[in-house]
Length: 199
Image 1 (spheres, rainbow, N blue to C red):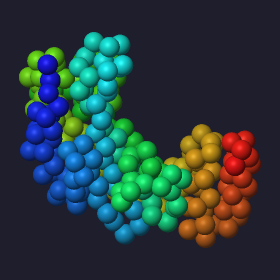
Image 2 (image 1 turned 30 degrees about the vertical axis):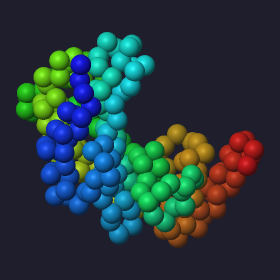
Image 3 (image 1 turned 90 degrees about the vertical axis):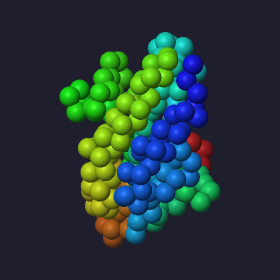
Image 4 (image 1 turned 45 degrees about the vertical axis):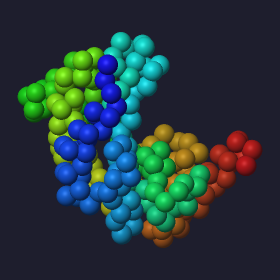
């Protein structure tokens, strides 16, 4: 049986020193944040839980990692404490297992590439954490740098499927960038969407 404490110790020893180099601080061994001029970078590490574990047959402590960027000029839809979680972020991405051959011994052998699977005996914990570290360096960090640019983040949001959250975020991006025609467009779309939810 895998004990969560063993995973957290490996995260602290292997992953956190790398994150710290890029300005991240630790809220706990599963949540990290880095404050920048206009935004906050967020990393959230979550275990898959009992339900998915029972469906897959893999330990519930297997991990999923989500990164996100929270832009400070957008009022939160739901108030949070001092720091946002990944689901508060306006742009988000799930990290994926590093491809075989670049993974320092960890071989993802399940279809779900956004989950790092632990063996039931826990012997691959260190390999899993190393793979998360390499995934962050290879794809996560470049993604965070790219979409910290407000114009690029706005372009990404505009490509999303139309929704309440898209229109809410897009109106504030357009306002911040002083794109008044787009602000009016997204503001009206958000108002119409909000009516559907009884707001």
